[in-house]
Image (tube, rainbow, N blue to C red):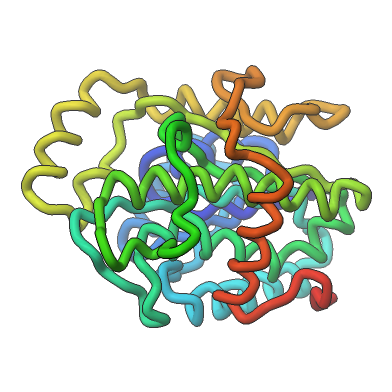
Length: 284
């Protein structure tokens, strides 16, 4: 049976992806809070009693947590030989009103929105290569109109929460391009989904008064998370694999001119350094 790993799967878009995919896939969800994960699983099973779904707990901002949960997932898959990892959806994300760092000293939006997916993909990629599977990042239209601040990617000198978020979303699509440039020949494909404006609580978690207020007003105009969830299903289900890179509402979409081979390679090398890994020496 095909398995799909989904990060940020206990609420918002991630929960709706898990709910939708659990009808045809074995869903492996990752969430930060044990209570929310148990509640999410109960809600899905109440609607789909025969759903195959399991949750793992991890704070993906911290790289030691990414590595730990990757070990746990790999062990789980090894102990369930009927499962094969076909998809990885790097959906977990955050917004921060102020400059806050991970245990490694990395700005938290950069750490969770980009590096967590970069490291988790590295740990799980050998399993996905075996199935010629697919990797999907949750992106945003906000990746447009910004450049990577190569001289200060953590924005330590002049932190702006919106700049940090936009940059992390540009990193998502550069990472997807970097993966395709390196591994498309092995049969895998990487994509970015732009969910559009969605009614989630991303802007209300661990944010200051102003960001919380603005997001509370703005999200009222968004769509239900179950709507963008269909695009993730579309990318996983379509055969042959969709040829595009950036999708919204199940259709390919234009993306930033900053998405170049040069920028993708530069980010890939920087991210490897920040995670202490090398995709060329990927473990089996």
